[in-house]
Image 1 (cartoon, rainbow, N blue to C red):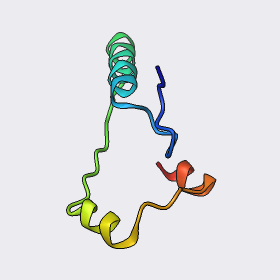
Image 2 (cartoon, one colour; image 1 turned 90 degrees about the vertical axis):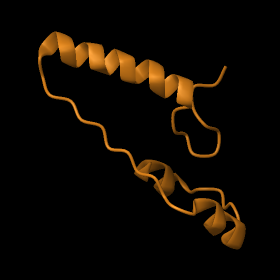
Image 3 (cartoon, helix red, strand yellow; image 1 turned 30 degrees about the vertical axis):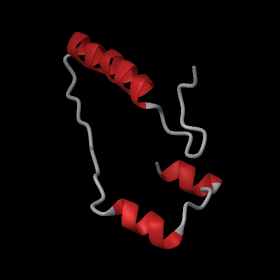
Length: 64
């Protein structure tokens, strides 16, 4: 089973959940602070429908 999305190289949902659990446990052990940034783009489907689904470049993958 893949742990990353083929198109973007980002973690799959299940791989992200597993990794997040590991990181939370690590922060609990060390007592260090932890933060998570979540972005949700409104109407993203409309953008894809209007402009297509281009294959990201290596530069794009680095920004994810």
